[in-house]
Length: 155
Image (cartoon, rainbow, N blue to C red):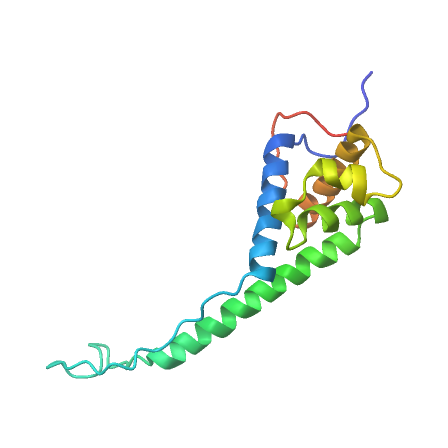
């Protein structure tokens, strides 16, 4: 008789892709500056009255300021949410995620470099993959990006 699990069947490949996309979004929000919108200062001549047919006047500067503040706040909150999720993980898992995925140097750091040189003492590739999957699984659950389906389940 098989053991009944209360956890959903996970599509491992799609879940891993979703977590990697979330971490890419984190790096973009954390390390790349986003151009803020600016109001146009060029006067435009129009024969039309300044108010719209609903008698609501558009305030371009206020709309842009609200957008800039809201988008900055959203980016900061997203980064804090990811950082909190990683901090709640066991030490090995959080160390792996921070060393491999949450750094400005992400494009220049490979999995092999992390398990061979960053971990002290070095760990094997299979051990690295197990730790990484556990970390991805927890991040996917925490960020609510887990992909259910017919993929193989992690150990």
